[in-house]
Length: 344
Image 1 (cartoon, helix red, strand yellow):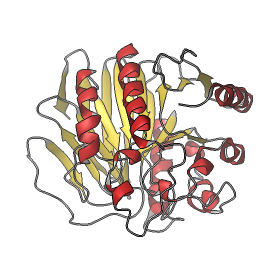
Image 2 (cartoon, helix red, strand yellow):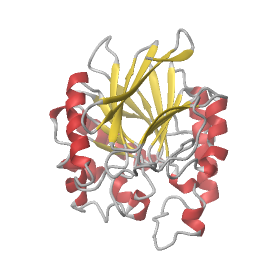
Image 3 (cartoon, one colour):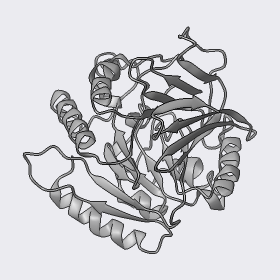
């Protein structure tokens, strides 16, 4: 959570910056009582009345155009134009290999501004941090100075995006990993703003649980960098699975979207019905790196680059995965009226 003074300052700045954009993002405070757990909340106001909400999702991308990042970006632009997307969600690892060195790091332009140049991608990008981002200057990615450089950029540790019929709950998952603290190998992590870790994680879990419990949205989707359930290289992130997943189950979350594993993946948990959607194919991928998984749950595993789209209405959410050639790899539809998932 941010200090109130910083929140108010950022509110004024965001309002000033957003009023001229096609989609206005308004920073809302859920309240100021220190006794109630709260997450910072953003409001997405659609400009397309009575139209579905269209979203692109990409993760693990920031490699200055290499490892097919530019090809993925091109196809994102093409699909984004056809769907007239509302915004983009990034699942983290925004800048490889070690985040940004500061707000003036040219990697911000080399890996973001000058890569995602298609007109359709000139929409707000809502970003979470990945483990590679924590190896650099975290505050640089969180700084409004980057948004001054490119008004698309919105990045916070954890926050809520209210998009009307759906609310997205962005969760900072990197501090959950024990080995980043106990065995960081030759990596240096920027834990400023996170320590003491136990208090940070306890507060974050309380915030997420409270926010999900308060939500009246038709759809509730949680976004984090790390996997919860995955047949990919990293597999399940045990700490996130043990600490965050019980909250998602108790609060009837519809889906959890992540990156971290450099693949495209769809798992439907047989017990809870939660959909685990991995969109981590924004650049470098790991071919053939897959673990055994229950085939009744594993609906898609693609070991190449690509991205995902969501189209959401009051009664339906359509999920589509694309490769770097724009080919549709997998589609799935969720229905609120029928209260079940069915493959297309």
